[in-house]
Image 1 (cartoon, helix red, strand yellow):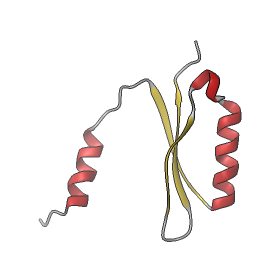
Image 2 (cartoon, one colour):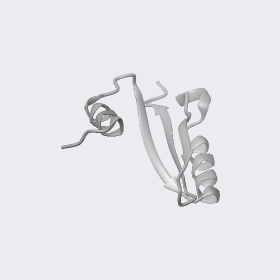
Image 3 (cartoon, one colour):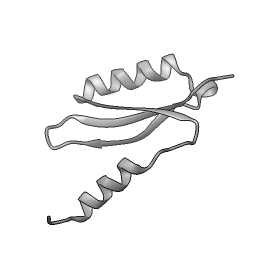
Image 4 (tube, helix red, strand yellow):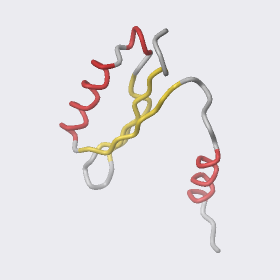
Length: 76
């Protein structure tokens, strides 16, 4: 089996569990739908209460935007 750095990174990411109190959701949508989804997410989970935001994003070769939104589990 030929291993590439990308394969190793994928395996390591699969093992990692984040226990930092955030819930994450990843989406892959066309640009305009991605903007609308992010706005909707931030409206439902305001930054002041949930510390929500876009954690990461990238443009895929097919033109879609892949992005990860994060928020705290609760505002209490």
